[in-house]
Length: 488
Image 1 (tube, rainbow, N blue to C red):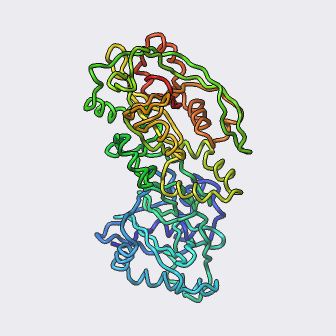
Image 2 (image 1 turned 135 degrees about the vertical axis):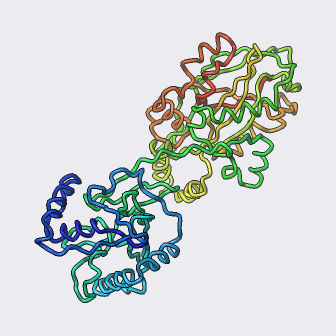
């Protein structure tokens, strides 16, 4: 198989010598066609380059990539690709590398520091490009100030190494590599998590950014991490990195619910469960605000429980219609990024030299926030599954206060059996300082405002009037407050 760039060579050779920098893709294609039609009288065209099977593939400038969905992520190693092109066209590879090396010497760059890499579109074309193995810099060929869309020197391999006819321009894309397009063209691109996020359009000399939707957590990773397992993770100091990761979409789409429903089916409530009344409660509390780390008051609205004072829920957990069933790592890169959460964290903590702990958490894909999954048995016996967001950076504190087996109430140690009640916050007063993303209340406020349907508030009156949580609230996001000082 040989690289077929017959039309590419013809077009680019002419463009480099005869036309200004294209102002648009359609214009470039039109100008190219005019030149091609009259080219035989103006210059000799490069000889056709055939594929290994003898077939010729026409690749024109009008085919140049515009849709990143057609990029091909080649998982072969560079060694494998270089071996292939050397087997197809050993003389071409040798000549092209010699031309590159001569230019690097003219630039004062030691050719021994250069590694040559290949990009292949199977059945159509290949391209060769240099990378500085020390700095990681990639280079693209330009002739007469025009960046070559083919990115390399193919079509000029008959030129002498002493002929200074081209320049090498650096590619300004972080962690770039060359990927092929289904058309047969090749472009410089940044790849993250197997997807192209940026690519260099050589026709228009511009870098295009691609908005990538985060991939939801794979279903086989979603699982219930019960309190005992989470407690052991904390003991090993591996809490945030071992929890299953969930995104907001995992909650709103019902994907997490499917896993939780299976769990509750295997761990049903006791037949002794006694219903409770739901009430709306309002409280004013202090929150830390940034910058300045100042405590300010704000108002919170919660769902509370009214219980039968004759029943000792503490000593008989089977009577409670409420369970905390598991915890997850809320790691939604899209929301963290667009909300400005990371920027606020780094801006606040950099002067305090405490930023390293946050970078460590980000790098390890640990969590800043938890999702606490809980279930409530409605009076009609139907089980409701709810989700609350909580700060993970205080996980030891919350576990000690919320999930301990025992707690001292009125001078007596009481067993809680991990079912300590939490009050589900469904609303709070939106304060100006919530525009800063450093608190979990601020992040929740951002989600409620920017993702309609994620806030429970519209259905709370219905829940309280019926003492039942409607199913529609299973895909919303509560926040929470722990409370454990009266019989439950």
